Every structure is written in structure tokens, then in C-alpha cells.
Image 1 (cartoon, rainbow, N blue to C red):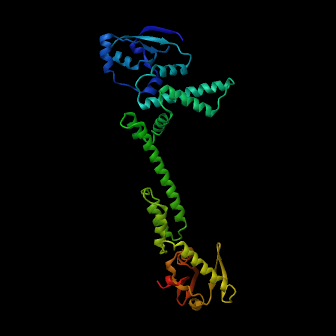
Image 2 (cartoon, rainbow, N blue to C red; image 1 turned 90 degrees about the vertical axis):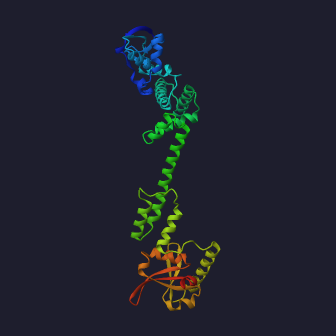
Image 3 (cartoon, rainbow, N blue to C red; image 1 turned 30 degrees about the horizontal axis):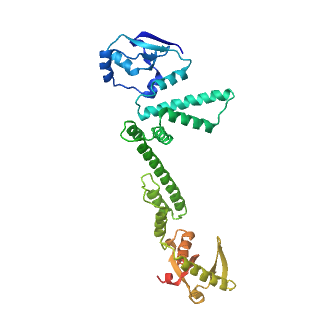
Length: 353
């Protein structure tokens, strides 16, 4: 690589576009102005054969501010753009950098190393994707003298800058540490994920509510964009559904429930063959339907008849769920006189309540 030093008219120089893209525009030149006035330009500006500045953009800005017509330049010839960008990175390797500048450098390093790996692959020296990833990670970590974990956190902050610009800005200007910015983004994403999962569970629970007006009311409460689900559990939602439907809240203790079930099935088996009863199947349960309603209290002592108006439930499923919570089952809608009623067979203590 040939090196020449010449005095070049200041106005003919331009910053290399990748230099500006990686490091941004650094307007502060106050310290350089006094140094150049007192001592002159101690280090020449490094340019390529097209007079693009590889190293020394701040010095060039200071020379322009001092209205110097020419500036000493070290002219270097590069085989390609990749070599020029590598030179930019190495000339700036030990400068003090902001987190965003480190991130911009890392992207260039990764791109260059990936292109090198692709060339090796074409030359018959392939490397696996996982191997390349590890190789690049180690190279970047060594280049910046930064641990893998911290560097991954820095990457996460600036890769999410489009979504969380305020956090990236606070990390870049030093208001927040890299770790604090990363933690904030991580926790925010997790909260958003938790909310989406909760909404899916709520939507599933509400899809089983047959009463349209109630379902729409709860959808507005829990699934709208304004809904705050941070302190809501799916149990809370299901409890509210049960309350709205007038269902018994809270199941009986496990042993009590087993007793209810055993006594109920014992009665069913006893009357299976009776002429006034027939077998009724609902999903995986087998219950008994009676035609002699007036004898229920005598023939099945622990069950009693409960009559509720048609408007009480929007569907058979709601009525049966209510009856099941009371230790019984629903026989469906019946026309009695001028009224249409839900007929339930439930535990006697609840029928009297």
C-alpha cells in the first residue's frame, strides 16, 4: 500500500461517507483550534486517492475554520472500499467513542468479516454459520475490549432504536448505562408479551360466553387498547363472568365434591331401569331426567327441583353450569302453565336458598 504526503487545497477534501456514517458529525473543534494556531498541524490528514478523508475530519474542520488554504495530507491507495473502511476503523480504534459509534463500528466489522468468510467459502475454505458467528463475536469483543454480555446488551439497545429512540439516546449521551437501557427494553418487551398472552386467554374465556351483551361488555373492558391488564389474572376474569351469570363462586372442597358426585351417580344407577326415567347423555357425563317432577323430593332426597325463569340464562350451557356448581344438573326448558322455566335438579340446601 503506497503512502504519499502532499499539501492539498483544503477545499478539495471531503470526508469519506463511511467515516461520517460510522462516527457522525463531530462539530466540536475548540481544543484543536488553539493547538493548530500554536503548533501547526502535528499529524497530517489521511486521505485516499479520491481525496476522501479516512482519518482527520475534526482536524480538517479546524483548518477550514482557520481559513488555511492548504493542509498536509498523507495519501494512501486502497485496493477496494473494504480496505478503506478497515483503515477508517483502525485509525479510530483508540479514540474515545460513544456507545452508538461502537455499535456502528461493530456492524461494519461484522459485514467485513462475513464477506471475508464468503470469499473463503468460494475458495474452498468454508466455515459454518455458527462458527462464523462465534468468530465474528470474538473478533468484535477483542477489538473493543468488551465482554460478550455487555456487547450483546449494547447491540440490543441500538438495534431497537427505531422502537425505543428515547432509551437509545439516553444510553448514547451517558444518562443511562448500557445495562440499564437493555434492562428497560427487555422488561418492556416482556410486559408486552405478557399482555398479549393474557389477552389471548381472556379472548378464549369470553368466546365461551353465550350471552352476547355480556361478552361485548367484557371484551370492551378487557380487550380494548385502553385496557390495563397489568394487575389482572385470568382467574379474575372468569370470576367476573361467573358473577355476571349468577353462578356460585368457588367450588366446594374436593372431598365434599367427591361426596356430591358419588351420591348423585348412586341415585342415577338406582333409577336407570325405572319406567319414569330415561338415560340422558351430555359429553362424558350420564345423568337422569325425570318425568314425574312432583316425586323428586321423595324419590331422590338429596336433590330438589329448582325453577328459574327463561330470562335467567342465555343458553342451556349456562343453566347446566349453574346447576353443576350447585351439585346437580339441568333438565332444560319446560313449559309450566303460562311460564317457560329452566328446570334444575340441585342439592336440597341450594334449592331452598
